[in-house]
Every structure is written in structure tokens, then in C-alpha cells.
Image (cartoon, rainbow, N blue to C red; front, side, top):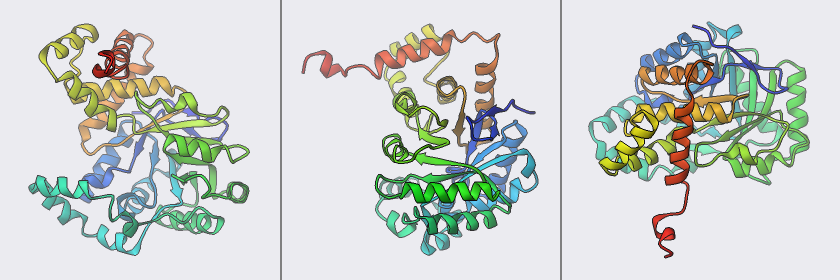
Length: 337
């Protein structure tokens, strides 16, 4: 299967509207399962793959590289610089499989680990690589681990204002582009800080921003850049499903208006993806998957979005309910408390 490609702004890159994000790939504990997920995304027509040195504690880049070298001329690869796993993290990466199996058998341990995950992050990740030297080292390291001569897109990874000397870094990135090591570059991260950092550059070809039906970061993004959005499902999904499942009357009302059961996570995921594709119709929407069925759900959502014969009134109804019931004033505010 093949999906139509779009021009990613003036970057010179043509990418599929859906991109596969590798940030959650390591949640599939079996390397064979991770390879199957990548293959399933490719078989579904997805040709844009997003990765970073820190993903999977350093394992995501080499695993993606082993897969994409068989399809290199047919895919676009985005990777990043600025954050890298420490030696401790790289050592821990090889213990992921037994650790994840333990988590799967002991949900309580898994939940406690997630609660305290932020505490040791400084032991696992080094966030000091935003200068030219760090960018150069990271790029050449990524080229080796991805087993490629070039990357299509190199992104500053979640920089904070003041952490980047924009003129020096942009000059290096343009030199790397002229040398054929990258095809384009940009900045990726949380909306507010990413947009603030972008404003210190004369121009940023691509902005990769966290976005969902509650954030809507593209409304505040500067003009002139191409956009890639991520996180369009993760945070919004649980909030909407929980709201719809709160009582049967809410669930019935939503289903009668939309024509679909948004108490079902797969159904709501599809609506969230379609909304994201509508909001970023000229860019790329990233999604991650740990189950093969999730890839199928994403591609069906794209087909509905692109089909001129598809009735899109349901997505309008979905957004109207989200805006009215989850984005409006709280119950306490309505009571004047």
C-alpha cells in the first residue's frame, strides 16, 4: 500500500501525512515485535519515521536503522540532537526486556516506576548538547547508528530558551545541509518553549510541536515554517474516554450525536487522529503504536480524512462536544464558585 506524499513546506522533503513515532517503540519489549511494528507501518504505506538518540535508552536509532536501510530511498527519517542517553542509560537499555516482563506481571511495580520515573532522569539523559560541537557529534553518531549517509530532518530536541546560540547552530545546520548530511532541520518540543526558541532564529524550516484537541499549538505557531505534530492521542484519549464513560447518559448522548461510541478507546483514537490531520492538513502527524491493530486504526483514520466521499460531519460533532464539555468552564465555575 502507498500513501500520497506532501511537500513539507519549503524543506525540500516529501513525506507521508502520517509518520511513525519511535518514542514508544521500546514499550514493545520483544525486539522481534518492534521489528514487526516497523514493518507493519511500512506495509500500511507510512514512509516517515521519527526517532531520537534518547528513545529506548539509545536502542531506537540502531533498530530503526536496521529496518530502514532496506528501504532507505523510499523513506524519510527524522532524528534529533541536544539530549542523549548517558552510559548508565545505555547499559540499562539491555535490561529492558526482563524489566518490562516483570512490569507486565506486576502492575503495581510498573505503576510505582512510572510515578517516580522523573526523579532519575538526570542520571539517564544528558541535556547539554545544543551547541555546535554537540550537534556535530550527535549527527555523526546518528548517521552511524542509523546506518545511513544522511538524515532527512535533524531537529533540536526540546531546547529551552537561552540554551541555544541560534546563529552558530543555524550556520552549522545549513553547512550540514549543503554537505548532504541532512536535507533540512528544525526544532521539536513542547509548544511554548519551542516557539520561544524558534523566535531567536531568523527562520526555522520545520517545527515539530506537541499538539492535541486541548492544546492546539498550531494556532500560536509562527508562520513560514512547516509543521509536524506529535502527542495528538496520548493525553487527550484518557480524558475524553473517562468523561464519556462517566455515566451511561453521557455515553448515549455522545453516541447519538456522533454516531460512534467514544467510550471505546480505539474509536476515540480515530477521531483524535482525524482532528489532528485536519488541523495540520499540510504537514505530518506522528503517532506511536505498540500493537499492530493501532497501525490499522491510524491508516483508516487517514483514509477517512482524505476521502472526498467521506461524510466528515461526525468529526465536526466530535469537536463540538469536546469544546463544549471539556474545554469550557468547569462545573464549579458555572455555579459561580
